[in-house]
Image (cartoon, rainbow, N blue to C red; front, side, top):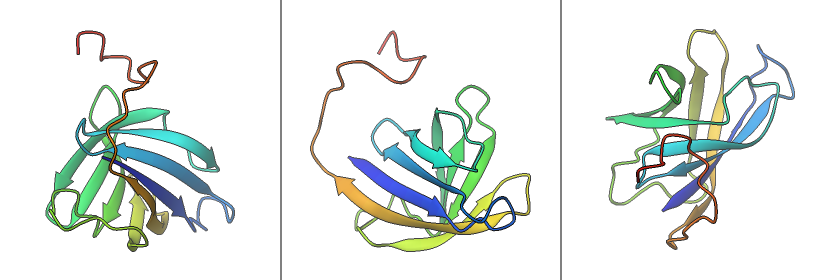
Length: 120
């Protein structure tokens, strides 16, 4: 399952700041597909806790962004249109997230995005 999340309204960073990220629920990875004004790497790992999903760095696992209320482990969610607050870790910037799309189809990529997946 791949979930498309739109991050926006980070006025403290930039009034027009946004990012579109894809979260691969099965692989516990995320990738940045489009962005402006948010300094996120091109991909990273996902960690979940009750009530929060963390978008973390690709190699060190350090949280970069907290998505409050996004329950990735909930069998009933997330769902299209769901929304909540977001927080850029290490900054005072707060914004919002919302689920734009959920793709339930299993699609095998032609090329792997994640650099450490050579042996997978």
